[in-house]
Image (cartoon, rainbow, N blue to C red; front, side):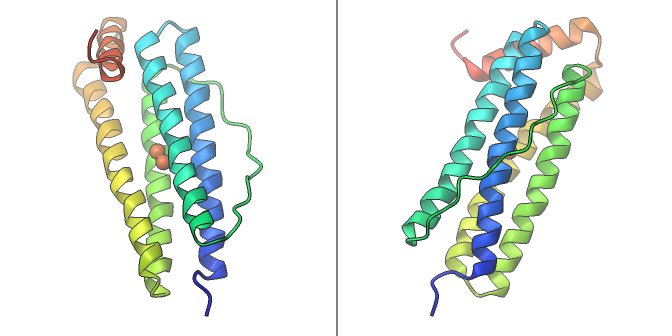
Length: 168
Ligand SMILES: [Fe+2]
Ligand SMILES: [Fe+2]
């Protein structure tokens, strides 16, 4: 009997690729933000980018732990033109909703296959997604309440800087 099905290995390989592509997307956003003077937001998106690489690493470790060699995937080029900080916040939320759907599908497959070790691993991703959706939808809520004037965006940028560096 196999410890993990071929289908689940395929889903986990896809997870590695998607987490690494999320990391590249957030890096592209961070670069755009820094170029346009949003230093706090740039630092926060750089942190998001690094966190996505950690999620990919979870999967490498999971597969290696089962003596399966993961493939380091080829990545697509990320989008790198954005309309502003509000656009980046909204696109990040849309992206995290897509990723959450993928993690739901992963959990569903693990459950259907009665692979509860993989199911538990999928839940780890879903808990992480809940955290990320909470953070990102919080930024969207702030935009909706305080608007997108330069003053509002500057305050938001400053607040984001505090998220990365609470001692500031
Ligand atoms: Fe992630
Ligand atoms: Fe994410």
